[in-house]
Image: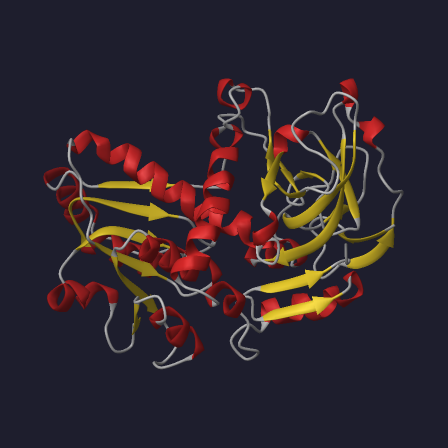
Length: 369
């Protein structure tokens, strides 16, 4: 069968390769599930892996099959699989358990291990292929009526985790009723965060570099979110016009942006960091001022990566909620859908030229049912 693979840490090494079709017998104890991949989606992680920035192949292999956002249909199950049946739609989770206490509880996204295992990202092959096998514990059922959008489950799960963890942290308040949220960055994750926070009925403001109006601002306004170009309204100046924010969802990884975000969160508020900062970036910060604001204001800043099975389930739930609240929105969010794995080069090009190509979410249709 065909798969798209890279040589780890080698820039622009993506290629189409032939690999053996997996068998359910590869999963022990009769717990194997064979999934036919119908769609895969790409994001900034795939772009970074293609650029050789990170990602390692499984032990004994010299390549890594890409792809961690997928949607498929069950084709075969082992004799001891009772949770899923042939013909059922599923979305696979990404991270797999290591050795820590959290891993053994099914919370591998919170692992305390130094080494982590992620399909299509690190030490495990991904889903940018025609078939894969997996245990049912890592496959999330998707209702038939959501099948056209099921591939969006994984990126939504990241936002779900940030929101759920913010709520958990804020239980310290006894009563916490956030009203206003700022999202820094209008890439795919920032846009999905805006969609999610509007589902929660929060006043939502998105800050990005692109001039207003643009195709992203148009899409955001369909949900009732407000777009701001930071050249017209810098994040640091936003509180003077809008008030401070109960939640700041940082989705750029750009240090000046998230440092500004830390200063505009309200007392008792939360800053959610979701993006990685380049290692060679340095910026002077007013640590004393920042420390004072967070101590005297009971503020919280936390980072979040990946998501658990629960957050994937919440993402599926909200797909249905969003289809009702903002009909047709997610279909517009998927700006490019290509036919066939052989178009992987075009998909990667779109990732690297997203603004010129007006690309938000790039999806490859791998196969028909």
